[in-house]
Image (tube, rainbow, N blue to C red; front, side):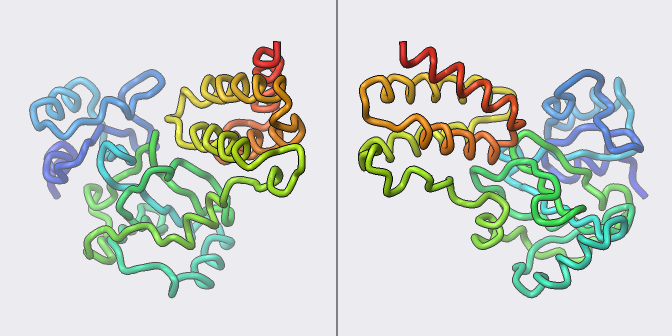
Length: 251
């Protein structure tokens, strides 16, 4: 078995050393952001922060995202997989240390980290995250097919279309609906760490439209809240940010 460092270099993907507990060996928040595919930089990382596991940064950095099914620990995940396995495309699959599965897909914009949206133990790792590259720990590659695109039906189940509360509301004109949805989608697709600021900015923009009488506040709040939840922001924090932004923008 080759060393974790050698395995990381062999992937040609942006990697980082991880502990046996699967956390980045690099201390401090955002340790996964130090991932690199440069062999010299990887050697320096492992020399300073040795780790037995190899993490791969997911999202745009690697062009990959991971559909994680922890069927060994969570019966709900196994039930979900049994019901939907025939709908999943042929793609690269890694067996995890605990007996779970990592389906490796080609990353598409909008795929982020999620936990348990479909069932307990069914998670995703996308933009802003990382995943353990289990073959580097001598776990099985159950399918070595090239990573397939994410199936559209699965994306729509995990991240359903933006709430359509505003549709058909007389107080919300067609052009205003489009503006509101564009702002909401910017919130959804904003990188982790910047989403609350983007939500406040979007709410300020909407507040100005409310002041001019073009957008109904209740409908706008519903759409922005839905976008914030899809982006992974806590509901209480999101509602406070939206209310603050609407007040600021309507002055």
